[in-house]
Structure formats: structure tokens, C-alpha cells
Image (cartoon, rainbow, N blue to C red; front, top):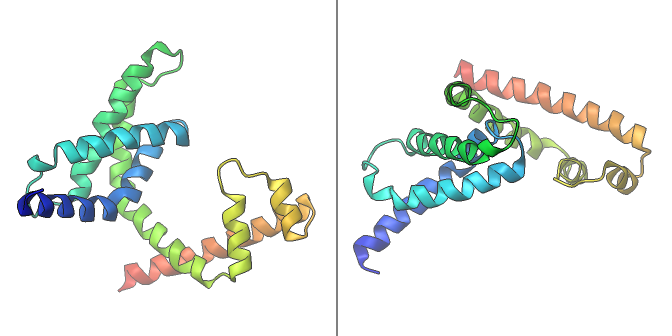
Length: 177
């Protein structure tokens, strides 16, 4: 690899890594399942790399990546067109536009959630993370926590309320500064 190719590769990786969670969330808001989002994200990653030479130096990577993601979601829906329940392309476009408009607010909330999760005791944080893993069995997580399933759901509800209140405080701090 030449030094120029190596530098291009490094620029792409830095930009992609910084924005990958937001692009994944953007895709996830438009497709029905996590597995679908993973499939689309793979295609988006390939297209972003293949078209990175067209990316203007100094431009904002995120909107560009959202544009690529939008087209890949549309392509995914077209491929799924043989299925019975598929959204109209105009509806998908509106979802994409709305999702992009909300991205800044959602990014603030994600950052606030990270701050708030650090305030949660490690053992509680582990239980929260286990409860929200794909394929998670709440009965098993409740057993690990030493609670009944009902008790675990009550605890989970309280923890979500605590986190929501914390997120709101953190976001309002950002807005006021």
C-alpha cells in the first residue's frame, strides 16, 4: 500500500469509526429488525469505502454516510419487494428525512445515556446490559439478579426512570451551555 493509500485508508477508518453508531441507528430506525439493520449496515460499509474517493476532504462525513445509508435502505426494500408487507418508497424517504432531522437530538441523548450509565453501580449496569441483549431471557437475568421475574421488571422500570431523569438533566445542561 502506498503512503497515499495508507493515509486515505486511515482517514476513512477514523471517520467511519466515529460515525458508525449514528449510521447504524439511522438504518435501524428504517428497517424492521436488528438483523435487517446489520445486513444493510454491511452493504453501507462497503459502499462508503468504495465511494470514499468521491468524499470531499473537509466535508461532514455523517450526512454523506446518511445519504449512502438511505439509498441502501431503499435498495434493501426494493429487494424485499417480493415480500407482502413492504413500505412505499415515498414513506421510506419520509422516514429517512425525519430520522436525519432527529439525529442531533438522538446523538445528545446517546451521549447523555453514556454519562448516566457510568453513574450506575457496575453490578446494576451489568444487569441492565444483560436485560437488553438480543436473545436475552428476562427469566434468566431475573434469576441471576436474585429477583423474581415480577420483581426484576419492577427494578427495570425504576432503573429506566432513573436513567430517563438523568438523561433529561444531562441534555438540559448541554442546551443551557
